[in-house]
Image 1: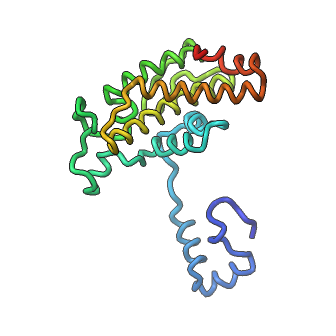
Image 2: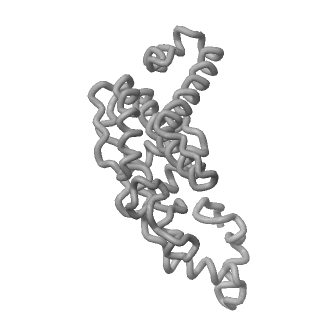
Image 3: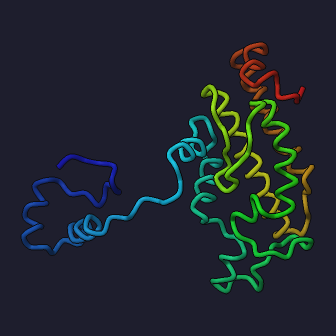
Length: 219
């Protein structure tokens, strides 16, 4: 038997165990493997390869990758989901001015607050690629063409703004304090400045500014 990445190592048995256990069928790991192979999970529908490569782009922090994964698979603990499990009293958006059902798509795209956040985000996205259009909202990508670096910067900006929205939402639910759009923008810009500073120390100021499209207007 050759070790593979199809499942946890603990579920895989050496080849000389497999033959005997297939005959007696008493080992729980062997039985589990047979069931798992017979009922293999179907691939996730609706997430294209291009989108998956973008939201899991090399260079993104693991936390950003995790948030992107949870967002695409609608696994974040929003109120519509928690309400179905009787964990909250209402499925509506926690923003008092909204009143609509809070789904994952609502948090990041459909809420009026999210619309204002993305209006601010488009300014930075336009500095990276002037003809970029944010379409297919739930997937968070439009014409993300260009060099690998340009595509990475677009995905990084979208991921940072999504993280900002989610953290702002979590903070509001926990403490009742709203960061507002400007609070999210300041946190995203602060994160970008920190990344640029680290690259300046690594590559030098001139090379780093070229990699960051002249500093994205952040000074």
